[in-house]
Image (tube, rainbow over all chains, first blue to last red; front, side):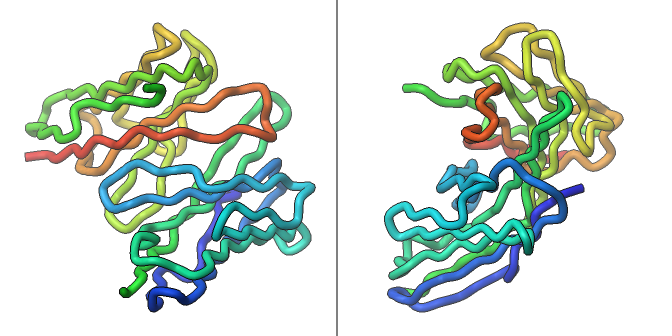
Amino acid sequence: SQQGEEDPQALSIQEGENATMNCSYKTSINNLQWYRQNSGRGLVHLILIRSNEREKHSGRLRVTLDTSKKSSSLLITASRAADTASYFCATVWSGAGSYQLTFGKGTKLSVIP
Amino acid sequence: DGGITQSPKYLFRKEGQNVTLSCEQNLNHDAMYWYRQDPGQGLRLIYYSQIVNDFQKGDIAEGYSVSREKKESFPLTVTSAQKNPTAFYLCASSSVGRVSGNTIYFGEGSWLTVV
């Protein structure tokens, strides 16, 4: 399995601070995606980074990908209380007629006002 | 509005009963998925379908069944053979073909509780 593993499992920060979450995986990927889940809700796509990209930005989000280390990080800058949620990485692999999308267990982020 | 609709939001099942969770999408996506999420855990794939009339088992398919008779619909039946069905169930869809750009879109989930 190439399941992503997020680290840390839980993170608590003050509003205005930056939050960094990491994701490690085991095998080759086509792309890696980050999702957000508010409690009891569905997941919402945040950002996708392809295997040939090293960094990507979207608003207050910055994602990096290091394929040599098989790891990715999600940075949320200037956090807000509304950023409180669980964040999941998902790895995508496709080849030989197969397609796999695998989620990690997530990082639970709490932003304290 | 375009999106994925799951129903019901909350469902209670008696021991020995089969229940069916509905999932409908109007995004014209070829691929659809069912995931199970237990409290504080990640998502585990139950079944997925990349085309009408075809579906594949995921990591935890035992005790579940699906059908894909229409492109927009992918219902999940939780059978009595599933011994621990209490969980949050998420349906999702994506386009297939442009692999590098596949984003997964999720419904709002269905809570299933065994009583």
